Length: 235
Image (tube, rainbow, N blue to C red; front, side):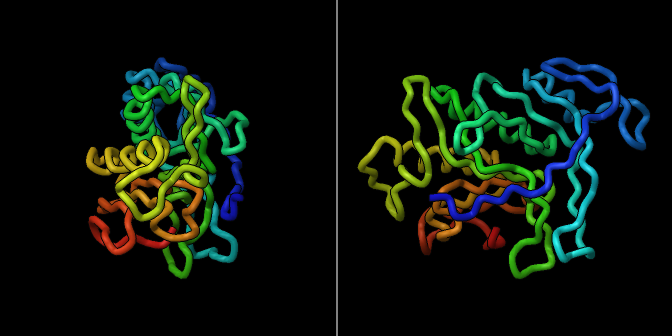
C-alpha cells in the first residue's frame, strides 16, 4: 500500500491571456515585458501541450524562513507526447511543473514510449516542504521533481514500482523488473535527471522513482552499497 503520498497545496493560476497547446501565443507575465521564456518555446516546439502558470510563493508548514517558488511554471496537459499522465490510482492529472522539469519529463516519455508505454502513473510533482532534518527546500517545493509510480502499456500491461521492482539485483526474473531497472539506468546515463532514487534507496521510496533536477547532482540509488555520484539528500 502507498505509505508516503504527499498532496500539498496546489493553489495556482494561469498567466492572464495565456494559452499554449502545442503552439505559442503571447502572454502577460508578472514583472515581464509580455515575453514568454525560451523554455516555453522549446516545450511548444517539441509538441508538448501546456498552459503557462503562476504559482504564488509559499512557505513549508512551520518554516517561514524557507520559500517554495516555481520558476517558469507550467500546467502540463494530458496526453503528453502521446502518453497519458495519470495519478497513481488512475485519475487524470494536469501536473504543475517547472518548465525545465517538463522538458526532462518529455525526455523521459520519449525514452519509454518506444517500449509501448502509453500511460505514466505518478504520485505528484509539487509539494512545498523542507527536506527532512534539513534547512533546504525539497525539489518538490520547486516543482523540479516527480514521483513516478509506474507505467501502462498499449497491450494493457502495467508495471509499478511497488509490485514489479526487484530489489538489490541485476539478474531479473520478470520483464517488469528488468524494464523498471533498465529505464532508470538509461535516464541516469542520458543525464535526463540529476537525481534518481529507486526502491533500493530506502523504504520511503518502495513505491516510486523519485527523479529531480537538483543542481550539481548526478546520482542514482539502485543497489545498496553501490551508488554513483555524490551522496544525495534524503527526499
